[in-house]
Length: 241
Image (tube, rainbow, N blue to C red; front, side, top):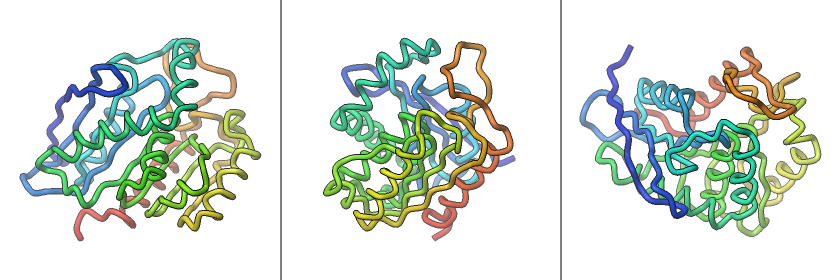
């Protein structure tokens, strides 16, 4: 296993003291970087393991925060914060830009080579950074097929990969259709993978907390989605360029 270094970084965003988790590959050279967005509850062990895995592949990875250092395991509390956030592109962009600034300020980061990968709310934030015209090499999103204004979607300048479960009631076929129609109309280089039989948050191992209806872990598709994310990065953000 490749040696990596990790640390937490506190930074302000959305009126809160956010706590990001930074994972660095071995060495001292500048590397391509991944801004890693969490599901609605916020970053936890799963996101930290993903950041570690990306660092082992040679990327600088920052798992950014959503809730001021808190993990919102209670679904009602999580929805009470995330639903207004998802309805406010400006707030999402503010959270994304604050984390992106932290990632760019890291000396190991090659600031010209950054991708955004996110899950749920974190994926929606990655898409909003693209719609805000941020120069990203790729955007990957799982469970977040959020739509916006077509003129802003046309500002996305990188490939977009999206993954969703076929049985996800939160991102149903109508939402999938709206998302892909918007991407196509905007001239974005987009791909959508529908994982058969998977629910919402199919990629996230079970947690010892209540879950919303329509949420469930699908280990086979979780592994496939991770491979698809890694393949996206290998194509659009190779470690050696």
